[in-house]
Length: 147
Image (cartoon, rainbow, N blue to C red; front, side, top):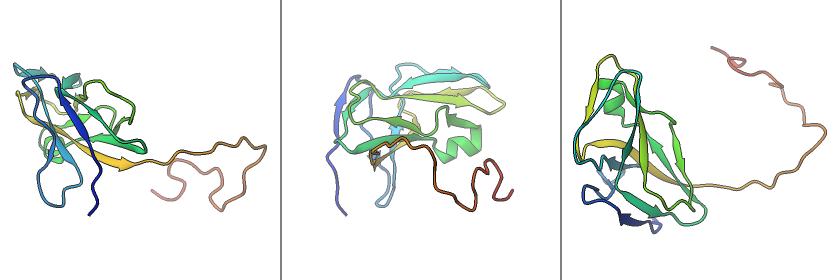
């Protein structure tokens, strides 16, 4: 399996460098770089720092996704899921967690809060046209192909 170089710069002593948790994991776990616990009330969004910045190679993005355990057990998700980090961003990685559950949720220091998948991206050559080619689906939108 080929690997790309991902350069990480720790910005906080509370940061945990992302890593894969198993041999075939698609995503790396992201940890909360907190000094003290943070409580997210039901319906609220909290920006949780990860304490590092990174340099992705050109042609790649990092997708920030919820952790399935937090989502199914507590209703904790990523507010802009999936979040995208562009290859030219050099600021701190921050995860916007949202509490969709019914109880307050406490984010503990160094807790695994999300996962990050690094993926290739294609850029489009955009051409403005007067008309698009016809398809069987046509302009059918939400739910047009079934329930």
